[in-house]
Length: 391
Image 1: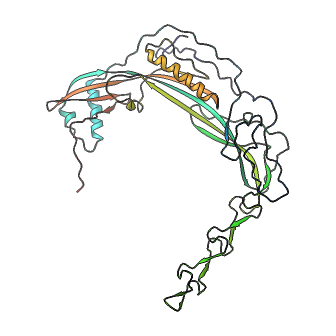
Image 2 (image 1 turned 60 degrees about the horizontal axis):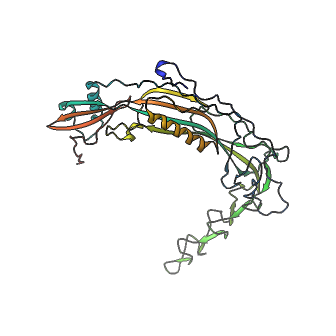
Image 3 (image 1 turned 90 degrees about the vertical axis):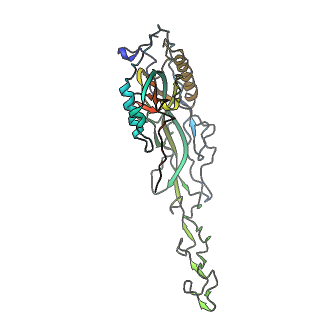
């Protein structure tokens, strides 16, 4: 497979076309909530209701859900063919004027830095350390299910009407590629009406503030009923207790789960997450500039290849980039294909400009770096700093 740089406007045909969504394997229908029992006991769905159910294996009902494996792809991935090596690209070195202007802007952003080294310093050497950055992005879709509930106020109850669709059979529109997103869908034909398992159908629960008594010890007289000897407490009128404001003296509050409706609509929620998983590899450029700095800048894009599954770069002039591409593609496919569906991959190669500038000021030699298309500056040991003092 020939590697073609985008600077020649001729791209190689990497990867294969996205086969799109594949229907889940056939089998028994998904699990749905059973009808409410006649008793008024707790009726939350048990934690093992999804166990041994085709399409929902490994899902923990009511305990946060579990990721469901996607359908297996039916199309094999063709193997890439090696292509001829390409010549190495270089970015022209920046001028001394550009280096000095970038240095001046960086110093002006520091409140405690003097501009003297910028104005009076003499640049003695400029050395380019351009470096490659390989980036792989894998856009995935994952699905998980869990039991959920809400107060019953007359919503449709459709359990048993027909078999519910499997978790990967429910249609959903993916957002723009390589942007994180999430969608929650109520699974059709899983809704049933249940007695509230928190208040056991009472619609109310004991007040926590007064532990169900409806009143509390008076905070003014501390329950004595009197203040300063025989003076009756005017707050509780000598009773030593006062009505609980939390429950208005009733001793109970509305059930926070069913909101006093006594019954719940119980159903299965399907959570769909689209995630952009990204990893970078930067070739060591041996200039002394910390690699963390390069994560904040862009470079000259040499390759941009977006496919359902991308091939590792072949024939690229730097073997470290080729090795990183092979390693990251294998890691991504192994890491994400088991618990999610890969929708699209994107690999890019950038050539990031890095210039090491050596200058002399007051008889001493110092250095700074100008890097990225944004001409960012890094100078760890700037020679003209001062301490700010607040008077």
